[in-house]
Length: 140
Ligand code: ADP
Ligand code: MG
Image (cartoon, rainbow, N blue to C red; front, side):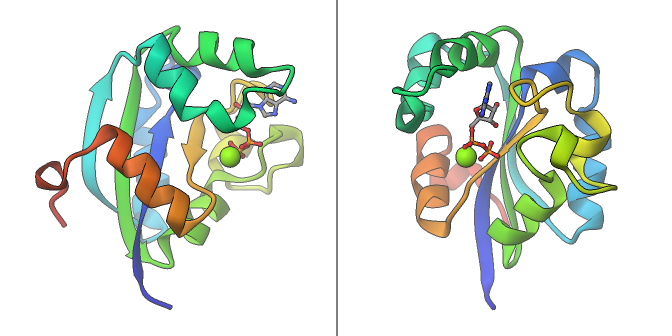
């Protein structure tokens, strides 16, 4: 196992409910370091591009509308096996299926408004990080 970086988003349902700190506390407790972080209002164009892989799914339009409905916090997290570790702390996509103690179990409102995004592979992490951060904005 090696030190990895992954890309994370604290989604609108969570920023709206002032849960940024509570979610970050779970990431840090799991051994993930927040090495880049910025609060942004995502544009429709950014959200459409970010979720392009889901463009054919029935929930795509709703997902894009949701992601631009309130500010989000984009993050780069670093740590041992960070991609898998982050996915573990996030919990299953559907909060009804998420394990106890995970972010989605505790905070998600629904399968769509599920509080956090996390890259699903190291390759995608690199692509997603590059969409929102330049190297000089990441300080490990
Ligand atoms: P994950 O975020 O766990 O990687 P996916 O990549 O499958 O999940 O989906 C991306 C995002 O699309 C989810 O986090 C969620 O916000 C939304 N989504 C996924 N499935 C549904 C669904 N059935 N209905 C509404 N929104 C969904
Ligand atoms: Mg995904």
